[in-house]
Length: 256
Ligand code: ADP
Picture (cartoon, rainbow, N blue to C red):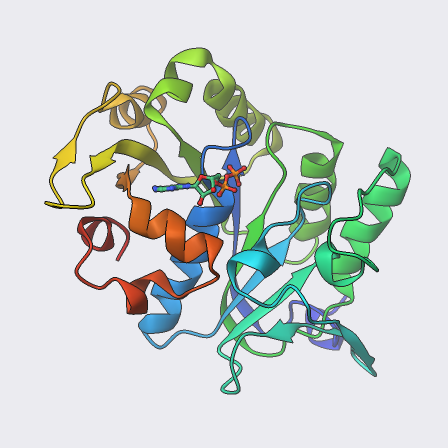
């Protein structure tokens, strides 16, 4: 198929990057959101495709959870976070009648929706599309990789915590990338130390450096450490742009 005829999807998207984690709660959606905001602050046009079908959190993190998607000739129109349309989002959260509804679907239905998300969203021109995936290595991961590979897929960023590195979940994620031929663009160690809200000093509550060690072991680039920062958690809970709201935060330098 000639990709230029592929009007409703990724024809005008320059880079597609998966964001993966071995298990839930390590900050994968938070990192997806902050990477997208950081790219937008450098003047890039960015999209986020949220394929965490059972736990879509991106719309809430960007304060667009009450929005709906509409159809146009080229497919689904993503939701934009601002009038300049520099950050576009597509998520199953926009298709649910109630944002708290549970998605209890069998594999084929999930795979069909993932296929539609990849081929039927009218992203228009984007510099980067970040794909927030469910935790682990499920059927949905295979489906998203197979579907994206038909169009374009640059590789994956793996998010881990210092503790998760020692549990093997993240190693399974790395094996998944190797088996499916997905290039690992880098590893991010999140929740690496704690930033004191009073003095902004960072203390290493858990071990540190596991992400870097793992990167060396697997021959993947290490992208950096992001500390546990109460201000980051507040901005995510309130759907605020952390980079704008707390530019003085110690975390800012880690994720900028
Ligand atoms: P996942 O997508 O891996 O399930 P989330 O991104 O939803 O994880 O993060 C889980 C929780 O941890 C959220 O409440 C989020 O605000 C918080 N969180 C993630 N990273 C950080 C951080 N570096 N500092 C403070 N809170 C964080």
